[in-house]
Image (tube, rainbow, N blue to C red):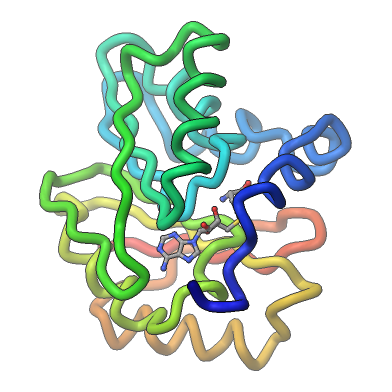
Length: 181
Ligand SMILES: C[S@@+](CC[C@H](N)C(=O)[O-])C[C@H]1O[C@@H](n2cnc3c(N)ncnc32)[C@H](O)[C@@H]1O
């Protein structure tokens, strides 16, 4: 595994109460995730955002939580059960260079994960291909790991993949972009 990938136990440090104050997941995602939708959390870790997505899509919706590390997904499944939303979350363990998922989604999130991917252009293009027409993709990266130039590069890769930039949402300690297909 690449040394840039957050180790599975690191998931416990980024999924905590302080983060909930900084990044209220329901508040960040409510504008993009509606009841009944099918959504993807790419690089989901232990499910800090997946569980919020599951609450927002409601019982008629579906969340696919994708990660490279099965151990992250195992913790996510336990947390989803505790939160009472396990019935609407599926997990998918992907490869570093390929998501390998083929069911269409209305919305995809990649928060604090794209900078860990060896070929971000490929991952962005793969997500573009998975989105339904009118689908949207929110990329959020940490300012401490991804500088403005690196983030601009992600914007260029997104446009090359066929995305349009819709918005630049303000999220604490982060750089974010909302893309549409
Ligand atoms: C810093 S964590 C962020 C987790 C979660 N999105 C959050 O914000 O709490 C980055 C996650 O991306 C995953 N990841 C790294 N490279 C990946 C890849 N190529 N494909 C899918 N997931 C990847 C890691 O395993 C890790 O769970």
